[in-house]
Image (cartoon, rainbow, N blue to C red; front, top):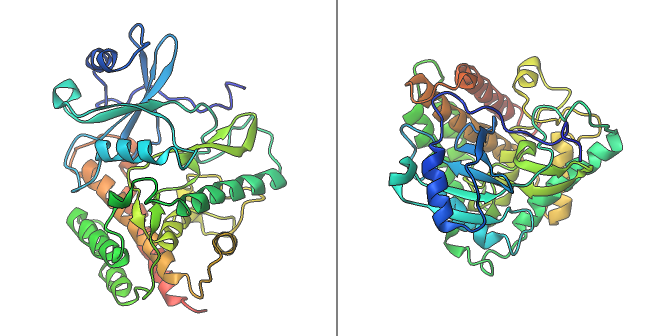
Length: 356
């Protein structure tokens, strides 16, 4: 396995340092086989929860914790995220092994959990430059990632003991109401009100909904690929937003991040996963592939497209709100307000072109 291909954590961001002595002391009381003080690095992809790599002399672990500052109600629940993955792992092989959960605020002033580190490629904005790719292999990668979504939606959540994960029926209405409220609460002076989009979603909710386990953030930079075969998925990460919900809304969430070659320059400038590569399916092809695998028919995907884009605008705005009010100094968030404008533009465009 080439080290140039494997995803590497970076230097910890200023203001997001981890009290590793406190963490190590707690871990040695709750885990066996830990020796020495680990080296701590941080993954750059953490826009919501903060993710660190703890490199002990004989093993590496991943630590997840919530951010500093004001948090949306129900967000950054480390205990829920830990228990969900622990219960799901026997039924869904892409979940990392959970190691330990800490709800003692005296350790680092917030809950955190530690899990198995999956070593491999994380396809962020681009695949590693040293990786040899072909359109046929990239298509297979794309299909395999979509298959992970299909497999998740087919898990029997009752057998997995996850019936409590969400409220089930009425999910669509709760999501539209909830994300509308969250966007409005996090609104800053420099972003649109979103009222037109929120009103459209409210009046165009589908009558039918299915309920299954939904990841709600399954994109390429939340999967780990085998460095010896980049088409093979080793794991699916970041289960913060998983719940019992509608699978088509989950697909809409995935497609909100999907930038393809024909998209405008603003979309290209926000691309954060390699969906532009030759061999990748287009958004329309993704919908067709998914529906065939799930054996379902969707006459009009517009609602799910607009929902995914609006929800992403809500997530981006919540992150920007923390930056705007000095609760994080991550420079990557400085211009997120521009992205919110663009996502609202995409929502309105999809609404105008519905049925065309």
